[in-house]
Image 1: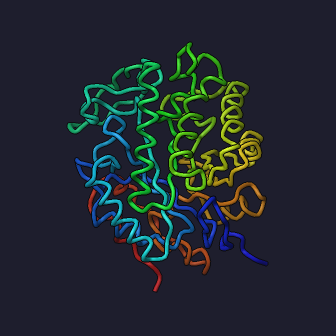
Image 2: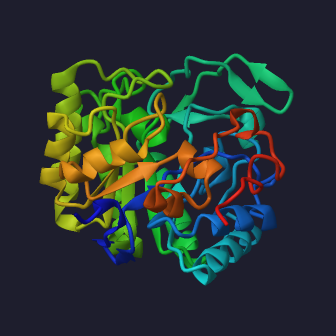
Image 3: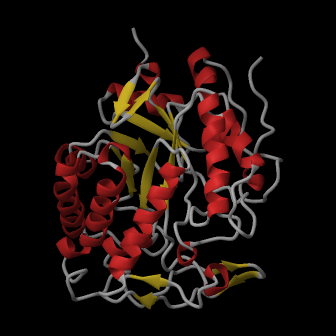
Length: 358
C-alpha cells in the first residue's frame, strides 16, 4: 500500500515531492537588526528534503517586529540575507515559502523602535512583553485608524514582494496565533464598531483585504495564509462557536475566487466541521498542523492524510530535532529528541548540530 506521506502534491505553483511541510518555527537567530545569516542558511538547507519549508515569522516593517532576533524582510540587507537562504535551499533540491508576520499588540515599543505598537483596538496582550532587558507589562496598543489600515495592508504587500525578490517560492501570511491579522478576527482584540469590526463578518475584513492584496501583487498561486480558528492563544477569545464560524466562513467565501496556493490551519481537530468547511468553501489545498501542545507524530500525519482531512501536514518540533525527518519517517527510524532549552537561545547549539542518519 502506498504511503501517502511520500506522494507528490501540487500547491498552487509549487510541486511538492512529499506531503510533509516544515511548519513556521520561531528560532530568533537573526540578531538585533533582523538580518538572515549563514547560520540560518545552513539550518534551512539541512531541512530541504521536506516537501515545503515555511520560514519563521518574518516582519515586513519594523513596527511589526515581535521579538529581537526575529528576521525581517524590509531592508536590502535583509533581502540579500534571505536570498542566500533561498539559494541554499534550492541548491539542495528544496522549496521554501516565507511567512510574513506582523505582531500587532504582541510586542513592545522597545522592540519595534517606533514609539508604539498597533492593533485593531486599544487593547493589551495578556502576558508580559519581552524587551532587551527582560520582561515587562504588555503595553496598550494604538488602535489603527481607518486611514492607517490600508497603509498596513500595503506593508504586507511590500514584504511579500520583497520575499519573492529574494527568491522565495511563495509567501504565507501569518493570520494565526494571536498576531495582527488574528487580532482583527477576534472579538477579544477587535472592539471596533466601524467597517473593520463590530460584527463577526466585519471582523474578517482585514484578513480578507490583506489576503486579496498580497495575492493580486505576487500571484495567488504563490500566496498562502495560516489561520488558527478557535485557538485560544495570546488573549484570543473565540469560544463563541457561531460567531467564530461566521468570521472564518466569511473569509473563506471571500478569498475563494482568488485561487490561493494553500491555506494552513492550526487546529487541534482537523476533522472538525469548521476546518473542513473552510477547506471546502475556500477551494484551496489544505495544510493542517494539530497545534503546539502535542508534537505531530508520523502516525498522526498518516491519520490526517489517509482520512483525507488535508492535502499536506505541517510538522514542527520533529523537524527541529531531525533535519532528515523525511528519511527517518520513510525508513521507520527513531527520532532525535528536541532540546527545548535551545529553541530561542541563539547560536549553533540545538540549531544545526542535530545528528542525521548515515
